[in-house]
Length: 292
Ligand code: SF4
Image (cartoon, rainbow, N blue to C red; front, top):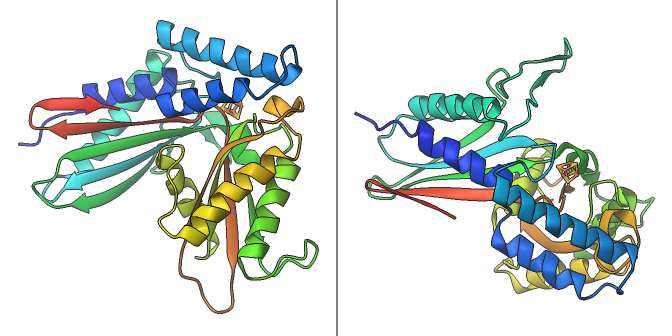
């Protein structure tokens, strides 16, 4: 008989919505020191961090937009994904009742909010990955804000308007173009999830998936890792700054992943994550549940 994890998942949602991960908070704090005292950029970062502390203390959402819930479930062989899906959905409805989540699922055809964050089979978005039977159940959750989602972009290379060819130099150009076009609208400072290759759909999915890793995690390929560092540095030289107020902190980190592609296509997808980079994980070990 499979255990019911609804309450544990509810706690995962509460933590994700109200408590920013330490690596993100640390990077935001470090960024304050780079901004001029008294500047609008520094003021914006200070306000963001005050808000982060208040949300954690009061168990209230870090931002009024609690975003699209994206679950990645790594389940041991033999576990029922149908039951896990039901439990995730029940936890999401309860989290909405308790105001950990704003009702965010709007029927796109009839413009009607379901009121409980459950919409068809795709809201919340749940991805299942089977692991060996002796591995723990791990459920990761990311809440992806709508404003930052709106400034994500996809490029089909070559892009002659940007002089971007089908190589890493071209990738660099289009990613910087995406940051330039976002300006402050995706609630900068942001974190860039970049996927190179795939088709239009898989490329966007991977560009979000890569955002599950901690800030500072580098791609194991040194060439890609170097591009990640370079893009963060160059994006911060654009002068857009926190919330678009100008300054040195436009991007907190860049994460890039590569995929195989058809010979005919070369897609680069950029998922822009706002400063409200809400991402948490629960791990079930026997009767114990750990959160991080
Ligand atoms: S983009 Fe992020 S910080 Fe901005 S309103 Fe949306 S969730 Fe909030």
